[in-house]
Length: 177
Image 1 (cartoon, rainbow, N blue to C red):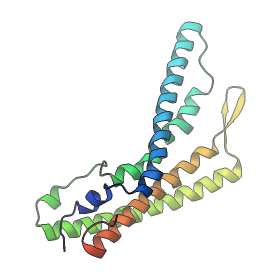
Image 2 (tube, rainbow, N blue to C red; image 1 turned 30 degrees about the horizontal axis):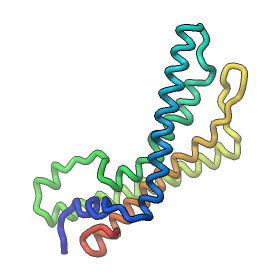
Image 3 (cartoon, rainbow, N blue to C red; image 1 turned 135 degrees about the vertical axis):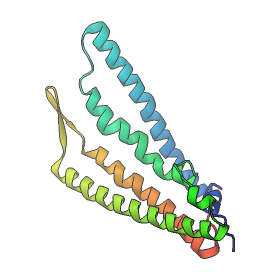
């Protein structure tokens, strides 16, 4: 049995076509949101400075759409590629077997925690969708409930990644790919 605790991420990083099919659009969405956010903020600042008229709703659009689009679509793919924060002080100070057990426990905690966040995010998204959540922006109401769905989608993909890694570690001492 392989006892390398990082094996789950190493094997998951060998990108099968199914992972790429899901991840590539997510990266494109986040990248597009970043560019659009920068352009809108720059235009808002220039309009405010040069014309004395900012773009109405910039703060709300950035808060409810661009920022969630930058974060939630890519948290699962980043976890799968091992690009998340990791503190391995305890695992590095122990033997391979103990580090392997830590990896199993860690993946189980990540799967459980992100699963709960997915469920809570889903409940909140349903609630605000039914309410037709809006945000008042100067003289009009902006619909903002669609942005709520990014939370359960992002954490749901992260949960899937954690479960696949955990099953791989338990099944054969390494991640399933």
